[in-house]
Length: 180
Length: 185
Image (tube, rainbow over all chains, first blue to last red; front, side):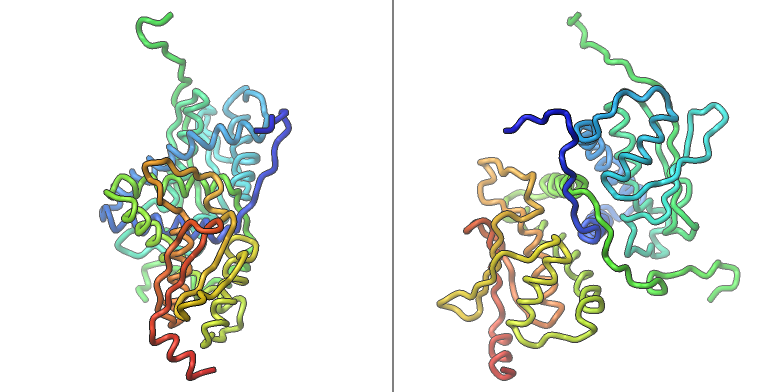
């Protein structure tokens, strides 16, 4: 295997519609399997978490950025680099809380929800919950515990989709008992 | 419509997307791997797993077929077998994977069977199959897409994925399709 010498290796692109429709097929299957919106939301979050955990390594390998100094930098990197690299969109970072520990990502047109309409009986479904899980998983691998949720969702009638991220605490690596 | 509710803009009111959006292959590969892991927990054999992947592909294909016909072909319907197969090889593959399929062949002994051959399918780029699941082919997903497109264009058939010269999708049409094709040509 050739050595990667620290330069970002090329980012192969794929047609967005395949991705959107594949995600749609997954959500439909989950709805058929679980029937309750809450359960489906939880599953999507779990899957997103697993994806985020692996995605962050791919991200660190490609982007070659150093450590972020504070939450503001982290938010900027997520919005401008990570989202752009993986979904080819740049959400806007806004609505910082007074304590500077919460922010919102506003997505103008969510590529995951591109041909989607939510029917009346699934009005509690957070369709793009996988994004919440992915951000949570990725940041947890970087020692930051966060909580993520959707504040507004374009599929439910709002103008844009707003994802809120709240910083909980920094995680320290705990060595298992017996090791020093 | 109920006056107290805000009139919801449905997706049918929006213009058809031009399909120029791109995402990274890693994002798709991770999502696909999650889907396979999810299905693996709910099935008991490799054949069932391939069926589940095929079902996912069927969902995708059924939504693609109308979109592509409106966008690429100006609402004309194909009625000949060879034409729909060429449509799949060229335009469906381009719309899905950004390039044409490698080869389209007809079986020499059976005129109901056609093969679409791909040396390295894009969706299986990061997938390695462990020994105990020897015959699993993730191109079952692509097989599902092709099956949906053919079935919804009124060419009933079954599509399966095999390991042969890379990845081969074997398309087996129903008798009625071939009989009808002979009448049209």
